[in-house]
Image (cartoon, rainbow, N blue to C red; front, top):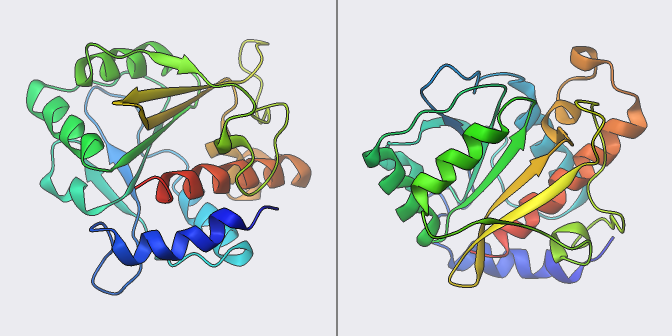
Length: 220
């Protein structure tokens, strides 16, 4: 485990406008229209928060909030998690709100829970028409800032017999969104009885999730 980023966390927390009045950060899960199941695996984020707090000194609330993409409340949360299996539909107002959120320091993590790929890419094209997802090299800090993943993303669930891939979307040189494809980390964070994943698989999923959370909060 690396500790340089952990020390940096406290500095970022003290300075960021995203911090809540309690001094703790709260993170959010994205609600979206279109019929996709944004609400699946409600235990995932709670378990990730618990795991991260047990391993690093991170001032983050135990509770997360569900926030619509078009809501002004979105701007109160430094980290936004979006997942699901199907369609995502956003209008111009929602796209503009998400764009402003990301350009002002917010971070979006999208986890493909199988079937969301084309819709996630279409959504982000509405948000940033001139930007593309770029596959990240395994040397990127998101793979080694706390726990080391020298071969990139862990594989949690098998979808189409493809290797897991991680993509970043950058705005003015800063990564504002991270998208995991064919990895399905969120299912690995869920309560053990939901998907019956082996403990070793859940451990790797939670470790990678902690890396993503730390990267987002140290990049504010």
